[in-house]
Amino acid sequence: MIKRLILGGMLAAALTGLPALSLAGDIANIQPLGFSADGKVFGFQEFGLKEEGGVPYSNTYFVDTENGQYLEGTPFRTEMTDKDANLSKARPQNLTAARSQMDKYDLLTNPGLIAAFNPPTELGSPAKTIRYTTLATDGPPKSPYTLSLSEMPVPTPKDCAAIDKRVLGFSLQMIEKQGAPNRQAARQATIVPAERACSVEYRIGGAVVYQPESGNTVHIALILAFDADRNGRWIAVPVHP
Image 1: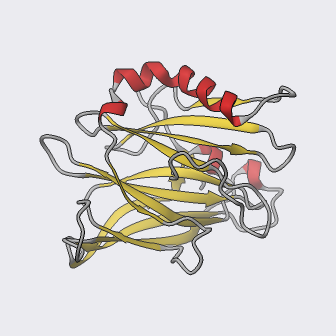
Image 2: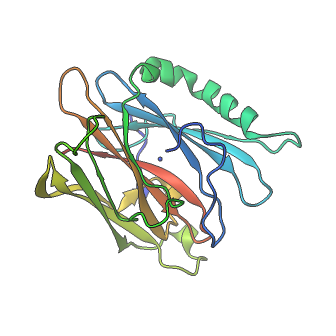
């Protein structure tokens, strides 16, 4: 059984702190963990320090790549408020809690490929599009893909009524497929995880791909969702070209 997502509104390996945007807030780091051998499950860890009080947190997510929903019983969340708490304690504790699922799907054996990374700290990089290939080779790009993100207003959830900005959802479209123009609606995401329900802005933060031994390549779009306080958190959106 799979946990349902509700209406409303993931990539730097081993980074110790991704600076926030100048407007305030904290932006989580993201560490992809890998895929199941058949590509049907993708896992990633999100972590950082909360703006208020510098509280270290770490969350591990497991996503069904066929429908974009979390696996039952996930994500695993860790937040440490002890006086001597830090990320070196929060992250391992969180991964220990998630270890049974990581081992069940053998994620560390199938890391996939970080095909593109587009953080908000990269000055001048586009916020709503990302272009990449599925093979790590030198030279001219081979059979590239391009994803395009559009924002759209959605009904404001009751829990978001107090914010003074418009709550948004998003749609994701693959506008280039293997080097050719394409107009495939990759994912109409007016539904997002409950914890992203009050998002007011989105950015394409990266893409991860994985080729199972049999079947089509799995694409994961990493979407960075911002709340009204400019805190950035991640959503992993499966794309099926």
